[in-house]
Length: 460
Image (cartoon, rainbow, N blue to C red; front, top):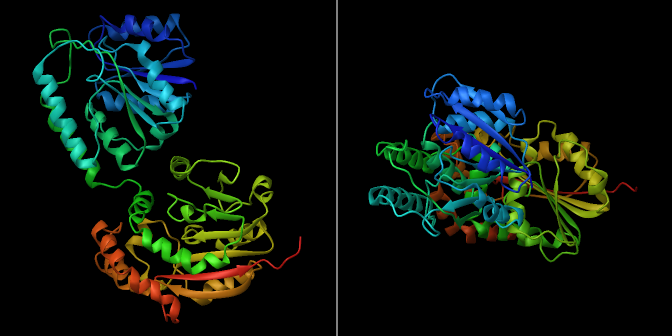
C-alpha cells in the first residue's frame, strides 16, 4: 500500500527540515503533502526553498492561520495513496514507527489505527497534560461506548478512501475529536498501536492550550448528537431490530433459491440469513456499505461481494453467477428510473428465477423520513405491479408487510417531520414483533411496505 503523509505546519522553523528528512527516510512507498498554515516565523520561506529543490513534495500555503483541521482538509483532495497518516511537524513523534501501524491496515484487520502514547515507551512529562487527555478520552469512551486510550494522539492512520468519505468541518485542534467521533459513528474498526513519544513544553513551541479542551469537548458532543449520513445511520439503527429481518426471512425463505443475489446489502442486516446457500452474492452501490459488508463477512467461493448500481446494466461478471433469486429490499425507491432498474434485475436471473422485491407503500406517508433517506417515491400495490409487468416479470404473489409500523411512520414523518427514526421507537417496535409475525396468517389490508414476487419466464 502506498502511504500519504500529511504534515500540517505552523511556525516550525526549527524542526521542519528535520521532520521532512525523517519522513523521507522511512522505508515505504509514499508521498508527502505539507500544508503551511500561515506561518509567520520564517517557516514559509524555508518551505519554498525546499519546494524548489524537491519538486516531488506537494506543498500548499495558507495566507492566514486556519488551524490543523483546515490544513488537513486542504491536503485531502490531492492524496493519491492508499493509506493516510497525519504527521505533526514537531519532533514529538517518530516516523520510523509507521510500520506497525501500517501493518494493521495492510493486513485488513483495521480501518483506522491510533498510535497510543500510553502503552509504549514515552518521555515522563507533565501530569496536567496526561490528566487532560484522560478526561477527554474518558468522555469520548462514555459517549461512543469505546475503550480508546489516547484520543488526542498526533499519530492517526486511515484507509484513504474512508477518510476522504468523511465530511470534516473542524478547523483547529477540534479535528482530533471530530474525526474520532465520526469514525465511531460509522462503526469502523479502530486499532491502537503503542508508539514512542517525546513531548515538548510550551517554551519549545507546543501549541495545544488548556482552552482547546472545550473545543475538543464541543466536537465530541456535536458528533454524538448529529448525523451526517442519514441512510447509513438508519441501517445501523435497524440492525438492532433483528427480529424484523428474521420475520421477513421466514416469510419468504421458501421462495429463495440456492444462488441468491442481494441488491443493496447495506450493513448486511438481511444478508446474514442467506449464508449457507450454494452461492450468495452481496452487492451495493455504496463503497462505504461494501466496506461494512467486508467487515461483517468473509468473502470466499460461496460468498461474493460486488459493486452494483441497479440503475446501470449489470456486468458480465455478475451475470456469470447465474443467480436464481434476486432480493431487493428498500432499494427501488432510491432509483429515479425504476422500470429500467427492474429490467436490469431481470437480466441477472436465469430462466424461471425469482425477484423478491420490498418497497415502501402508501403514498400518503411520504414525508421527512423519506426525504432524508433520499426516496423518490412510495408505491401503491397497483403501481408496483404495473411497473414489474412493464419490466417483463410475471407476478406470482404480493402482500403487505408490517401494518403496525404505519402509525409510527406517519407520526414521525408527516407530523413531527423527523429525518431519522429515533432509537427508542425502534426498541419499542421490537416488542411488537409477535404482531408482525402473525400477519402471515391473514391478508393485511395495508402495510408500511409492499412485497411483490416476480418470475423471469423469458428463455435465454
